[in-house]
Length: 115
Image (cartoon, rainbow, N blue to C red; front, side, top):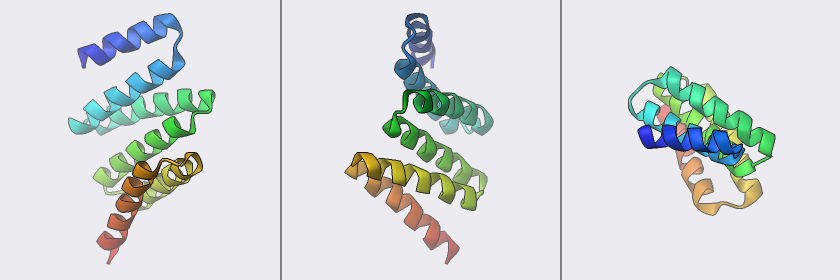
């Protein structure tokens, strides 16, 4: 976490919004792994705001996917589905086939959970 915080500080000082967004996403991933879901969501939302400002569809898609994973962990399956569908749409727009397959698999897993 320290390295991500240092990288965030450096990117902030340099005004590199893309780098800042990336580090917020990394910090969110760490907190999600630690089950600090509220903290993770805060980091993902900061990353999403920056990626939205930068009009980075790839970055936005990653944030939506991560937020969907948090909602699945929380048991909010409808919200997870909504977020993963947003993610899938953006990954499809930019043609990121491996990510399309991953998110499609997550959505398919939700449907299996419902059966």
